[in-house]
Image (tube, rainbow, N blue to C red):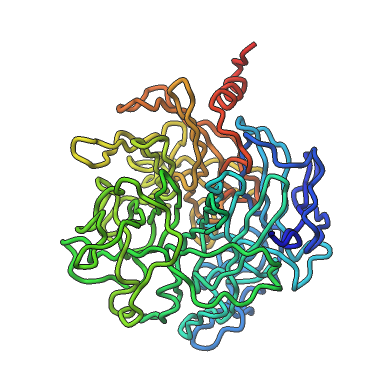
Length: 578
């Protein structure tokens, strides 16, 4: 029986309450149900949001960063703690970030606000140092993705066991995996959180992603009662070579979710990778990249008993879509599904239930070997240092159609003449990519890219946000959409699909990840193979000044009822069925 005292009660913010209002939570409270009116409702959206409502004690020209740094790794802060100029410190301290609260906003499928859940954090009454709590790092743009568990009963995400207002936590070491070359000397557990439909949280700590950030997690609740968590993220913030613990603690991880409160959980020890890829799996590549950086994963999904990951950032590896092959290895220890590095999942694929068995003696030369991941056949296989692909979120509409969110190139080149971020506006692959499987060639092919309505590269205004140019960058504060990050979707019985997506931005902010961004939605015809003229994104919700949106999923307990979803969307457009 599960330890019911492992849950923490939620805090519900009803419409009309101030965003930063602090209501109490009870740490380690029994798993009693939330009030019926405040439960997570099925067939709704859940959007993760972070709010910068702190003012850390940073004095420009005085404060040394990172905190407790040791020479020669110290720099002097260039800006104080006020938003948004605080993120101009990123130019001096590449690890700069501030831990902030996480909110989970419940919305109707059309975007109407229902209620907001505040994840337990140190700023709340009765949440002490030993209480269950969790924060994110503002402005780490790839954090707090949301994913439903395989049985639909939980939504899960990742963060840090740290107080609100802490500096540079996202690049800190984890307690068991310490890199002495990391300029950030702090030690912080990464945390897996899961939330059920009754509003109860459960947390699990891990030593994975030392020196960097965990980004996404999916819980696999099996029919025999076992539970596994698959994690995506990055590791390492120090020199080369990296410690063994950093190499095994990056990329694709697996762990068993815990029932005990965080304070009662033993140190989880060395991270446990569930998958590994290296560029030498492709015949054209004879030399390895920086060991441990080919698996700098961001997006994560499960489809037809296969775990998929995306990589879309960094100069190592390949920016593309990967899958974990559980069918075994050939005589040369190559994955059976992709002996040459690319392939498709084999029939009757199964989800992994244990870490990959690797040769520890080879970690410094080969990484986590043997490799058991493949590039999905047809997707890019070009080295990241020369690519224009920046995949992030991924959603399979069916077995032969997958939508990929492309974040965009991040270039904030700005033309005062046109008033646009010109590189962002000129992109042809940023936005929502639709890929279709060609059974004749056995490869996936890009059908088209949906970007109408995103207004790529066109600045937009935010109330109470600075206007004009940021003196630190000489570029406009006003952000523009650059592409998309996390997504989720639903197929309807009329042959259409609806996809909800979180936007990425470019701007003159000291850190573009701190820009207020948007939740958008689009409807596409599933069978279409050429770009529909009428398909266009519509803004569902916009972050306010001091806010960022990060993940989107359906609420736990959602019933996959295409008619219900379609009817609600029709109502949203003014065509309610009688």
